[in-house]
Structures are given as C-alpha cells and as structure tokens.
Image (cartoon, rainbow over all chains, first blue to last red; front, side):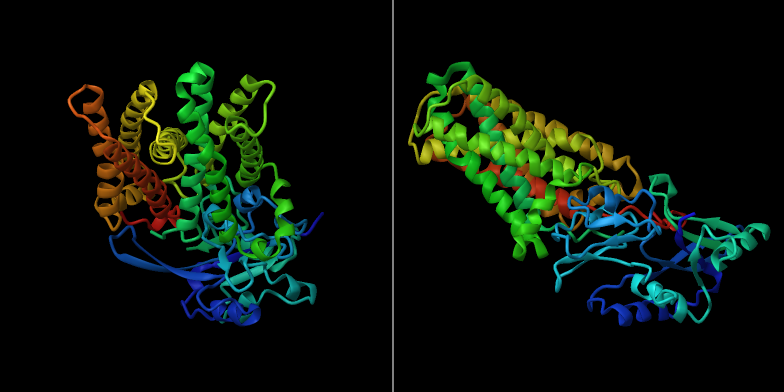
Length: 187
Length: 295
C-alpha cells in the first residue's frame, strides 16, 4: 500500500508558544508577512457555562479532494502518491486562483517568487528521513506526523489510542467534501 | 472573519472590461441579425470596443500574474486542467476574442465574412459565456460563501449586457457622432437596469439570510466599510439615477441631450465596475473552526 502522510494535533497539549510557526519560517525562508502554519485561538462555553479557550493549530490539510488542485489551471498544484499536495514552482503561473479556493486559508502568494505557497509537510526533510520542522520543534508534542496507512506509525497509534480512550477526533470542514488529512484530537 | 486578499482591483478591472466587451458584442450581434441597416451605427461602435476591451481586460489579468508575467511560455499550461474555471475561461476568451476581431473587421469594412449569421450566433454564445464566466470564476470557490451562489452569473450577465450597451452608446455618440434612432436598444437598456436592480436586491436578501460569512459580506456592503461606494457608486450612480432618467426619457417626460446621455452611460459603467470591485472585496473565507463561530 502507498504511503499516505497525515498529521494529528493533540490540541489540549498546545500552549500557543508558536515554536512551530517559527521553525517552519526559519526552515523554508517563508516571506516576512506570511506563515505556512498558524495557531488560532478559539473561545466557547462549556456545558457548565464557563468560557473555555483552545489553541488551534492549522496548516494545509493535504486534502484528498483538494479545491486548490481542482482549480489550478496549470496542474502546478497536484496531489502526490504519498498524499502530499504539492505546488510545482516551475509550472505555477501565479494566477492566485488557488488561494481563495482553500477553505483552510492555508495558501498565500509569495511576491518574491511570483508563485503560490503553502505547507509541503517539509518534503525535502522527509526525503532525508526527518520529520517536518514543526513536528520536530513542538515542545508539547502536539503535532504527530506519519504514514496513516502504516498501523505501526506513531500517528496511527496515537489515533487508535485516542479512539480507545473515546477522545474527540475530528477534521476541519468535512462538510465541504475536501477530505482533509489533518486530525484534531481533543478531550 | 478573514477577507480574501488574493484578488484585488486588477481582477475587478479584468472582470469589468471583459463584461463590457462581451456585452457590447452580444447586443451588436443580436441587433445585426434583427436589422443591420437600422443599427449599423451601434454595431460599428460595439466593434470599436468589443475586442479591444476584452484584450485590455486580459492584459490586466496578465499583469496580475506572478511568475507567468516574466515567464510567458508558462501560459500555455493555462489550458491543461479541464476542472479549472481559469482553463475554461482561457478557452472561451480565446475563441471570443478571435471571433469579435473577425466581426469587427467585417463591420469596419476590412474583410468580408461568408456566413455572417453563423458568426453572429457564435458571438452571442461565446459572448454570454464570457460574461457568465467572469462570475463563474468567483462562483466555483466554495471557500468564499458570498461568491458561491448561482445568482452571481445571472447578475454579471445582465450587468455585462447593460455596460456593453453603455460603452457602445458612448462611442456611437462621441467618436462616431451618430444620432441614429436605436430606440429598441435604449428600451432594452432600461429593462436591463431594472432587472439588474431586482437581481441585486435578490442577492442582498439571500445573503442577509445566508450563512454567517455571507451575512458578514453583505453587511460590509450595506453598512460596513464599503457602504459609501456601494450606495453612491453602485446603487445610486450606477443603477437608480440612470434607470430613472432613462425611464422618464422613455415615457417622454424628460428630454436627454447627447451630453446627458453620455454622462448617464458613463455612470452605468462606473456602477458596473464597482459591482465587481465590491463583490470581490466583500469576499470572506468560510470559517474553518465552526465550533467556535461567534456571530
């Protein structure tokens, strides 16, 4: 079976230190005014009426049915066999159409290079046998990366354990039919 | 709510110019098939602006490109993905630009076309597709709920036809200095303006009852940061004033001289541009963390 890379966030571990954002920016020389990954803050009331704040990481969801791939006129944005949605910079004309197509606001325009840009799960690092920079750097082990098709991978084990412990496991906006590959695990 | 920032005024200009060019050619082709002799001044005026405005619009799209602008050979890839609205648009615009160029050359006496009726039908079909495509381009993006509605192509096609008539009328009256009577086109223009007002009211009412992102977008236009441009440039100048003036003129209660007609047609063009500009700028992303939405 092909590899299928995915990432899980154990959300309750996130302390909003933003080390993941900095690691990514440093690794890939991301333009000054943009990030490939973000930490949002979500506020809601719990069952007892008490306000609860969650720190919510986000990045490209490497969707199986990615809108950016559908709308890219040049096929610069494409889905690789290993599950990564990748932008071929040599083919991207910089029409920016993929940017508003993404419901996860994961893409931005790199004005220096004239191309659309986003998270690649650190593809060059994977080739060297390393994990993505954000997952390596995260001090709270929020980000768990791996091959979801391999039952012995860390991500498969974390998701299985979360399911056994009846934790809440969800993905973002599955109602849009994008089939995202980032899992959120929360108590 | 997070505003989309990828599409800016360049794209609004592109959508507007493509609409004016396509609209003028569609009306000219229809008029041509109806009574060429009677509408020849309008047909010639439309021929002056049809292809040049669409080409100028494409130029604005081109200068908005990133890498494609300095590596133009990459543009050949714009055709390769059949699921992309930009690929559809590239095909439609290419065909329409060629056809409108041939039609303009025929009308201005440079060439003679064999089956002009076939050409007119092809222009009507590709012209409507061009005008509609400018909205479909936005409408297929489900990440921006305000754009993702079927009423948008209808509104854009009506607006393109209306602004197309305005553009051609201005050329007819200022450059060609023709005072030929083309009353049916003037009447059609009035009806188009009324239809556009109704379509716009429909979009407003639907968006006000829509998902939170749509409500946010429409409130930006009605009472938010874009309210002045929406009410003054689009609603008042672009739709209400021309509709009232043309309506009174139609009813014989107001005489419009050449200067006033040109000024009113220019107002319609201003409204046409702001329609696209405001819709683009009101686009906000759908919320990804739906559990945390605070209205």
